[in-house]
Length: 426
Image (tube, rainbow, N blue to C red; front, side, top):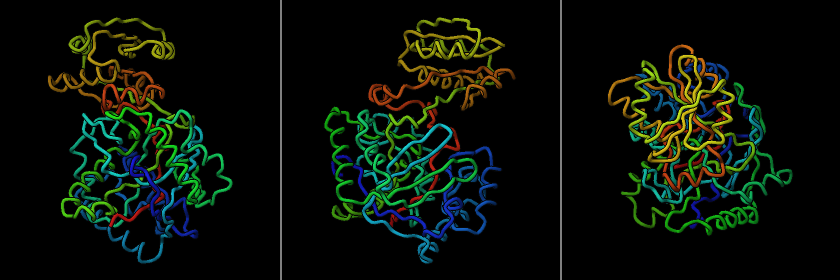
């Protein structure tokens, strides 16, 4: 653990008599524009014990009663602890099986050492961000964590394990492991099952497998853990720890619970882990203005008219530095040369930055090709970005550092991590 930064933890789970379907709630940063989702969740949970009462959905972050909500979260955590809602599994991992529309994936819940994490763009730390961290998003999350007795993770962290040596051996022997929970997930989230991993041999095998991966990494630029989801939550935990440790002695820093964050690690090569590019839609912008700004960031722009988006997507998979543009009833394949970085998302981000500086339009980040097509029919300029190959994901981060914000998503919104496990941080 000292080398890799990932280890077993004292994990809290609800008592066996508690309804897991009402307990488990999706990540707080989902459905931020759809309050009706969270209203449905609230109605479904009712008075039952639930992680919903210990998180703050981000759709409520800007409301005037935010402080009251945070106080209610702190009070609920204290009450649940006092009333014995939780049972503790000491020095353990949880193997998680998640069944979704995209397939079945496996993860392993444990804790990460925040001393080995740096979310700055120039980071060469063992644990790092995959997309740009927006510093303004950290303070409100720190406020939620400030007096909290517990942390509940929706953080998913990726490892690049082509040999499938860390998580998959546990998944293969899951029938031998104790089932901690097995439940459908509310509002179309699929099904989740958790298994206890607490034997010394299994824990040693996890550590040894991670160390074998670590040994093959560049010592000057090692990347063992790359953020999948929840980067701003982990960044907030890191920032909180930096504040706390200033008041601790060196020996206290070694064991303080806030030094760590509970996360679920997942293998990027898991076939059930579905990566989707997040596309862009430009509004109140002429295509001539888009092309002009793009020319400032690419020495050569080749355009090819394509009959359908399906055809263009096939071409995107074969051509580097390419993206699809949908506008005025046309589908065009843009291929660039002479750009600062190879990934088209970087060049499009440069277009966005210049567009916003000059006031020539606005942009939104869109999940799904069909949604972009619908917006293009209404007058937007739709930009479809290519898939990010799993094989080159870690190499891209090593080469170009973190991706631009909102470059990719792991699965659909209802496939994100649900809050289930907890850990004391005080």
